[in-house]
Length: 579
Image 1: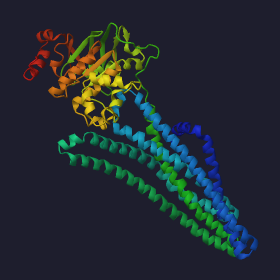
Image 2 (image 1 turned 60 degrees about the vertical axis):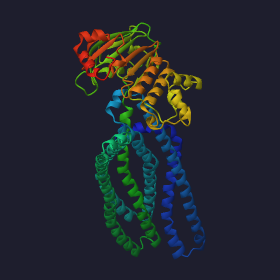
Image 3 (image 1 turned 45 degrees about the vertical axis):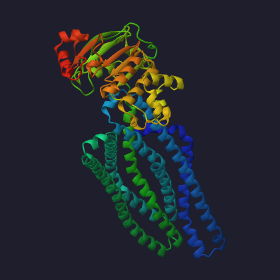
Image 4 (image 1 turned 120 degrees about the vertical axis):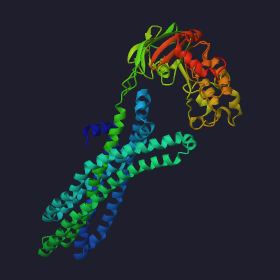
């Protein structure tokens, strides 16, 4: 078992040591009372049924009732305290994990699939919670019960007890063999759950695509394959768990058979009373359940440890986008420069950007054109520091963007992209996202500037309409106008438009273009254009291909001197009269 992981997990338990101590004392009392009930068999048989002691006849029933009452009370007390602690720890771990993931860089999300992260956030944390609430407390409580019952066994007859303490450790031996296998299966199980979660998440998000291609059967079979793997892992675990008990029982039965024979022999010789022997046998049989619980707990704890390791693996990821706390970004006064910038994605051998250099003056626009995958969007992602450059630098008014306080930098940047991101919240909340202090008048004003107010008011609940998952109730153009309204209320100094109109029809594009003009005024604007007609009037156009800048200039200059740009124009010429 990983001692470092257990020690680290203990830090989550530290604030609740008082409750854990109360739970621990309750476990101790429950274990003692369980042993007492086994011991009471001796006076019941010897004093009541054999000696016919009337005083004990009156006293013993009350003793048994009292023992069961207090055993029940302290079992409840222990159960409540441990569940309280486990729920609080689950709450803390999930919150810490979610909060930590929000601050991790984009390259972390490039590596881990959403389903994998959901599995760690929900499934792994639940496994840990169950271990703290049930597995470990039950094992400790039953351990105390074992100690108490062993006292009863030794108090009744030392010879029989000595034989019993040899037999029971042998019966537990199978657990030692299976423990390591259960840990490995536990890790495989959580990885398999992550795979299933990923498939479900992808299927739900892409359900329209699945139906459009009539690919339901393929996705269903893919899901079945994942579930089959999960089933086989579970069955392997069940096989080990279920094999444990019969092995323990068989080995234990050999010892018990011998103990009954030997105990009867001692009764005949008068070395032990009938009540003492039955008290011994009762305690011995009562030992089976706690021994089984403690033994199985070893397997289950190993499964939990693998889940804890997966959680800590995420928590140990360090944000490599470092924020300077001292220098606040207040806007672009002169220019933004890319100076010999190189960048490559993690686990990629080739650079996505190679020696990128250009300058855009404050309050001016710059447009990037080129084939898909050429590096245009990557250039834009470096400005708000979704990623940091590998070589070179990006400066704003001569200051490296890495020297600015990160929140202040991103607060002054708004992004409107081809893929409009919406929350399952009201239109009002989506427009005001990140600006909780906005008045209704400011929200409505922004919506009007984005040409969104009219269609919003036609909805049943107006601005309080719930957009559902990713705004499915809106058209592409409507969602884009909501995104533009959100950018307007942010009042950015730098505006990034990443193919903002590429997925729209001509009519929707015209409305969105009008909204974008309202948004672009007085700002430094970076534009990636799918349709060249949308940036043809821009004075500064940068042609990007395979991570390199081929040429810069206005439309006419580039058309004359850049064959690649000319080729792009001709491709669109037949569909766009403006070219």
